[in-house]
Image 1: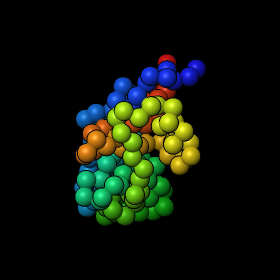
Image 2: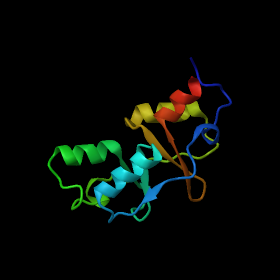
Image 3: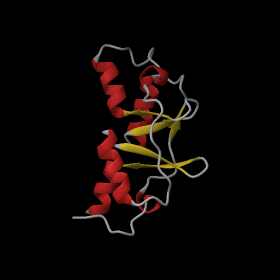
Image 4: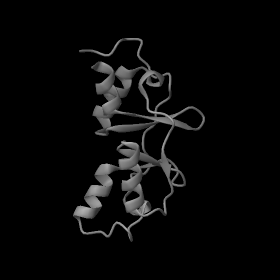
Length: 124
């Protein structure tokens, strides 16, 4: 099944955007993602960074204490972003090209997040 040619990021993105600070412990990041049923948070003071469930799980699996390890220690920096008016075919191609599952949506400021799950839910 293909995405409709007119489907834009704004049609499928998750909003409002959930954020976290760079100095927050991983346990807080994990709790927020669980409570909001999401798999990534934009890092507000990191300058274009996100932290994902995979980042948190990887750190804990490597033996890092989730109360002592901060978001700054595991976040992904300089992430690609998209605009709300970008066509979803382009977003899917970007996710494939960069090997990512989340792209923050920016329209002057961060406004939402689009994920591979958003794409899948839109298709079903």
